[in-house]
Length: 354
Image (cartoon, helix red, strand yellow):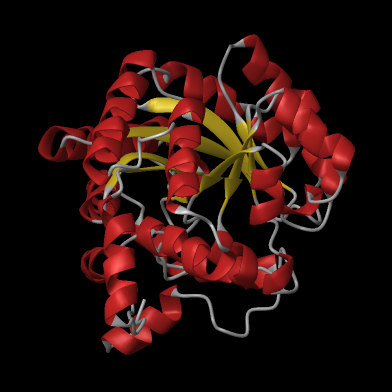
């Protein structure tokens, strides 16, 4: 994130840095700090790029990225680093710490445990390692975290039934919900209806990636399957019935601006529907998606929306509140987070008139 800001822009950006932020949509394997990849890769005996510039290029999506599939190619190196308890523990801790250091006080990290499991190291072991790393981050930093376990779209539906069962074992002990990720265009959500029916029976909250690949109907399908949040949701812009469905059911929309531009979820930046969604009364939230792959942070995402898309500071606070209320966290955690937001509002005098 090598941005050059004027003094006035720096002052504005500092406000967003200070804002206590809540992030709902962040992939662990796409968000490892580069120094963590360097250390874990060396420990694993991987062949790593020699210079920091080359490592950054390997981990960050190219400027000429054309598709979501091409975007996903950047995940192979980080996943190769995440094959042991110690590596996963460290990755979870370091990623949460990096988020906390730029003002994020609540973060849900999502990942597919199957990609780190192998003989002698089960998916339960994978989840336990990430949970332990996040618990240590909570203890050291005073932040709150949660884990979302991902099924993968290209898997056979029966394979993904392992995810609700795995989540149930850790629900309330690190894990807060589940998700479905991967190539949305090739594998629409209804292929995995059984997974989410099972999750609903188990009372496991879930979000689903949808509307990232130009299909508004995928958003409708996911809401009707019981998703409480939608990852991205871009394609439903202008589909008034689907927008109304999400508004009436209070479905939170996990928007990830920089990632959406990179994956071509919107072809033109001028078409980004943040203003429409806010004006439609949707429960918009702002997220990074992948901090390292997209080369961004929560501060950068919010400042981008403020400086280039006309999102006001009051709206940034409202979207943060939306994220807290939509979090798959306990009521006591939400109360504590909202308290920190209220304190911030008082300090910055944004609370007047609300």
